[in-house]
Amino acid sequence: MKKLVVMSGKGGVGKSTIAANLAFALKKKGYKVGLLDCDVHGPSIPKLLGLENVRGLEAKEGKIKPIDVQGVKVFSMGFMLPSRDTPVVWRGPIKHKFIEEALNNVDWGDIDYLVIDLPPGTGDEVISIVQLAKPDGSVIVTTPQSVAIEDVRKAINFSIHAGIPVIGLIENMSGMICPHCGKEIEIFGSGGGKKLAAEMAVPFAGNLPVDTTIFKSGEDGKPFVDLNSPAAETFSRIVDGLLENLEMVKEELRRLEEKAKKAKKDAEKKLEELRKKSEAEKQS
Figure 1: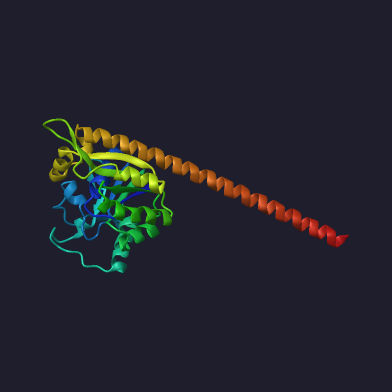
Figure 2 (figure 1 turned 45 degrees about the horizontal axis):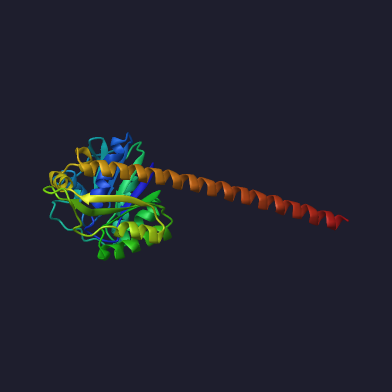
């Protein structure tokens, strides 16, 4: 099972929308997928998938059974609250324990990918996920304007320093095609994400425009990747790029491991030669 975290140093950039639709896009490509909502204080996944009224989950043989949505296994803090209005007032250790339970005691089964939606910033939940899940890659989400870019820069640095390969930076809400005249309108500007990716030497996954189908799908509790729209086609290509980058990272790690093993073997061989030479000199 490969674990992918979707993160951003900034709230309101559409991170949860990207996470949910990444999970369903992977499912459409034939993979078995789980979706874990780790935004403890502001879980958005239930609303995005029409599950906001789900309360409590079945447990079997010590394992919590996630909600199955069109073949995607979903678990969120939102399912465990008495009501959608109940705030979560937890300190770090309790949040750490919840994330540990979500990773180890939810019956994810035999899945290929676990997509993890993280809260904004680089606080307790994010640190716990890094420690407990050891993600295979991170997907960073931003919007074009500089106020988002500044915070996203911190998320990229966090991922790099935590040893999580950034497999793609997505610029969300990047322009909008006017439904009346067909011209592109840069509501929040454009190009900031691509520029940031080049500056920080991480892969740029692509631009996702403002699209009314994305807004409507979120309100209706349905993934927009299941709809026939330009946004769905664009996002499908973005996901293909993310998977390619993940494979490249995997291959590079394999190459580095082989290089490290060879270096270790050569060092051991050299050490043995020196030991034999030393013994021979003592005997002579």
